[in-house]
Amino acid sequence: KPNHQQHQSWLSARPMPQSAQSLSTSRDLYERDFPLYKQPVEVGSFSLDSERRFFNDSRQLRYYVEPEKSPHFHLRDGYGDRYIKRDESVKEKLDHILRWILANRTKLTRRAEASSSSGFDVDFVTWRGHLTKLLTTPYETREGWLLAVTKFKGTLYVSEVETDAARRDRETRTGRHQEMMYWGYKFEQFMCADMVDGSPDSSGVVNTNEAFCTVVQTRLSDHRLLFSGEVDCRDKDPNAAAPPACYVELKTSAEISTPKQRSTFYRFKLLKWWAQSFLPGVPRVVAGFRDDDGVVISVETFHISKISRLIKAEDRCWKPTVCMNFCSDFLTFVKCVVTEDDPRVVYLFCWNPRCDVTYSVHRDSSYSFLPDWYVREMS
Ligand code: 0WD
Ligand code: CA
Image 1 (tube, rainbow, N blue to C red):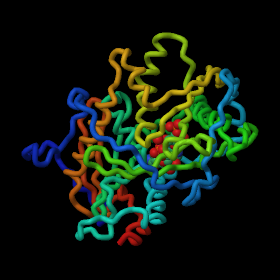
Image 2 (spheres, rainbow, N blue to C red; image 1 turned 90 degrees about the vertical axis):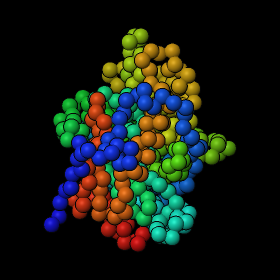
Image 3 (cartoon, helix red, strand yellow; image 1 turned 180 degrees about the horizontal axis):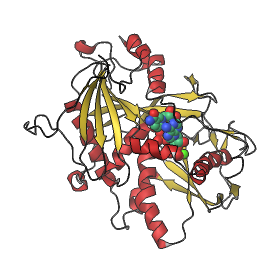
């Protein structure tokens, strides 16, 4: 019968070192030397069009256009009449990445081990956004997460599951909050051109179905990673460094006028910005600081490589090494736990603030996320 769930008990009296049942997220455990993190290499990219259709090319890539120092971008413009919003209740899981993998299988090196000959040479496949959540976990005090992991032909696929709390938040967002989510996309429209020599067109429609995603390969300690992340735009200079070094991440944030606001920005927001862009090797974030009416008053560039120095003077601040070591240890924990190689089996890793990471095992349940078309094609 379907939906049979087999819960592991982490209270069981098993010897800890051999099969740990949980993982601590306590910061002090991760304060050691920075782990190996290889320069991420772009192995491909894909685009999602205005109807969220997948294309194995860069047609949605846009070009960064340097703004004036003090622009007056009105981010509320178009919210009521020129906004097409992606349906967030549709859960795409890893589908777009899996489509990219099938279209680019020849680019990926095959696994050496005869036992999983049709698999490829990567330990983990996931979204960059899921890794960002892992990096920030030791400092997160509000939102927990659920990550579903399936082992298939030797590779571990990691896909997020929306928590009940996140779903509640999504379904009860205030009108103000929904409008502020639009501001980030509107800012992109003020900063990006569709053509390399074009200029931004703020009179157009904002459609959040559209996306350009990079696919990168890298290694964290002994974990070989393949992940994809959405990229806002690139440097338009054709002589700029190769991707991902030519990419630019765009952000909006409330303008900073008090020391307390500055401190909050450094301790919380810069952590998220750093983690998100450091992972794929995107070197800079361009931030638009806006007032309460959604008018961008100033624009500032943050270089990812300088952020850790920028925050050092701040007390009770975050440390990149803690983020990276926790992520590395979590991936080691996943490798130890997820032993059964079966596309129908999901190991669900669960974390809530002030708790350890725990897991449960589910066979043929609604958590299964590798689609039949992928399993069939890879078999
Ligand atoms: O199924 C899921 N649980 C998720 C799917 C969660 C997160 C993302 N996605 C998918 C979507 O297909 C999206 O196109 O991932 C893509 C983006 O992935 P990512 O780069 O790994 O995600 P993340 O780093 O969290 O966000 C990058 C950008 C965001 O920009 P800002 O500046 O706000 O960080 O992607 C957008 C957003 O513009 N974004 C999303 N787009 C579609 N679906 C989502 C989402 N769930 N979350 C963020
Ligand atoms: Ca962005």
